[in-house]
Amino acid sequence: MTTPTLPSIPEPTPQADLLSLAGKCAIVTGGSRGLGEATVHRLAQAGAALVFTGRGAEALDCIEKELTASGANAVGVQADISSLADSQKVVDKAVAQFGRIDILVNNAALYTPSFAMDTTEELFDSVAGADLKGAFFLAQYAAKAMIDAGGGGHLDADHALASAPSVLFDAVIVNSQTTADSLRHFLSSEPERNLADANIRVAPPGVRAFPRPSGTPNLPQGSHSVPYFIVLGTIEPKKNHLLLLNLWGRLAATQPRPPRLLVIGARGWENEQVVDMLERSHRLHGLVEEHNHVDDMGVGSLLGEARAVLVPSFVEGFGLPLAEALASEVPVICSDIAAFREVGGDVPDYVDPLDLLGWRDAIVDYSDPDSPRRTAQLRRLAHWQAPRWPDHFRIVERTLDEVTGSGRASP
Image (cartoon, rainbow, N blue to C red; front, side):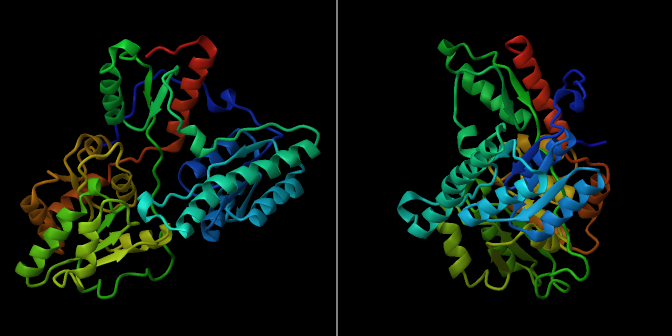
């Protein structure tokens, strides 16, 4: 069975024994996906009543039904936390529904990469509105509700504060063994700090399949007659989009019926050459499509008929697009780098990120309806297992239990 490499740790204390929040009410922002969604499930498992927010009504409704079916008290609220009116609405909903607020997890965030010289006032206001203003005033509104109720607690896991670096730590939790090895190498380069034997724990993030719409999927025009591939992620140098665009230029010139490429992701930094090719290349016109604003349901729809997801990155710490594609039962062709080997095992087809001809051969093969390489990967994929959030939290809670219970945990 091919599964991501998980760290070997002692059998943890059952989660219910580590944390009990029965009778407490928690608000979790950004709770409809990723770490926020995982936090919602973990708090519900601990017995807390929940109000969780997100921007997509469909995802919120799906999670609310799932939690309610499991016996949890949970309400999803569609809200934009940068709006003070929406923040107040969330607090009012928690008080009206459950009579109190004990916990606030300020998880929601907006990330739009941009150079300082290119940042507009509109972009600055949108990011600051969600990440600073929204987090601050929601905490203020929640604190007032706690005081009015005659007490309350707090758990404000604000994303901006949680990332503050420190050398005074008892343990570091990272997302992969690859990241752990890189961090340990970095720490050992400064022997005067005596950090070579730092307690580093690996807790891979949970990965779930992209949701797919019921009924007829929203596929690219002409997709039934022309095969297509997807590259998913922020357009930035380390993602190596340039290799794919150059390759598609060659395919356009040499193949009688070249496949199409869908580039899904926001424009990041230092991407002038990639953007120039996307906007100006006549050879790529009609073959390469850029999609900057696609929600999870839209991505799931597009993945449905894709021949493969392409991940030609030079370097990664985990490889979320790779894992999400495999979880969505879509084949992957990716760079032969350590993080991808760790996550994908023997399932993907691996190609050196500089081997243009190797990528060409793989893509031409996968374009064939009877592709032997794609068929072989689908057989391997049937045995792949995605990392799970419950496993992530078991490692996190075990680490916290050791650190707080007996001083510095053993490496």
